[in-house]
Image (cartoon, rainbow, N blue to C red; front, side, top):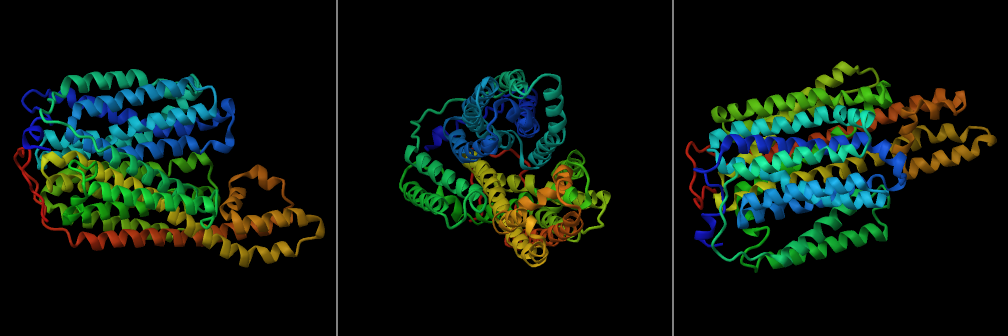
Length: 538
């Protein structure tokens, strides 16, 4: 990209109405973040009307695949053709996808429309942080990124309540229709406030890079999503997906090394700061997303609280994350980027260690306290990684750098759920084989049908056995003798397995702490940087 074009595709700081623009960005982030949690709340009603219980998980998978894949593409296009065009396009795609979701007459249609909606969501995801990077100096940016991180956390808190109200008061289709008026408001505000200019040079779109990147990422995410769950890791389906991903990603690397305007510039990895911060964000997400998904299982299966009450366990974590996201923007100016990331990662590590100490007699209050500690650490780290990356690169690459940070965190979350899910399955199979199988084999001949079914689940789907702990109705159908013996064994196995899960999460966070010590001294700028000025430390 030539210098003339680079200088004209960003934001015109003189003409931008910052107040209108920031309100528009906040509204857009709030309604896109709300969508994920609201849809989860409405899932039972959707399945009840459209059917398709067997493919229900695809409502989430389709959105995740499309949104994750498009994030780095959106960042690069924002650098090439301008923030306004890309952001407004993302908003419009998201609204069209939402409208179509609301009109879906079958589960297959809804899954397809959710994939379209995910494309819009993936474009919107990094754009707010990119534009904040354009508008403000490094010190100002630290504060605003904390605010936007807090809005994202707020959406996670109020989403289930909003979703429940919509489903109860209207119907599940309004979960999607509600995006339209809010999206129109956000689009108008951003279109007015964002005074971008067109580039004067010729824009060359890296079609080959986009195609091979989409293929590689989608195949990889599908393998990680279904491996060990729907299909064994050694099955031809998973092996074929992994081989396909490797072929696409290898082709992607070859293409990106030769084209003039790569969609994902490989030279970024030559930058020490980029490589380290991407690695830290990846490892943080591996531990965080992988471990957090098991907290409600522990609270319902071991402590015995209801499904709705277990959801409140996540509330303190989100509140503490919002707090440190906002405060961290002020603290980082005094203690520095590297120190704040180290403190945050160590705090996360303490949170994981505390989670690993939970046992049969842990109370809800104690579990909530552990989640607060984890949230404090996450809030210090997540916005700071984006801030540090934006300070380390020229504005001509700010879009692709910011979106790359988001991309690696999303991939890390998927890896975390896969890896720690495998740890959960392996540990459960081993413990239940030792503790539960001998008891089952002593049962009368009349119970052999049920015994065979349970023994098969121990080997193929041990987590499915824990669902007995979550369903009083299922337990009531079992003989009293089995309940009195099997339930304590299941609870003990669940506790011991989760100890290992959280310790593995601690291991990934520990690796992230080690990487942090290799970071250089990243200074926050006090003045707006001109386009093209390189602050990277190579």
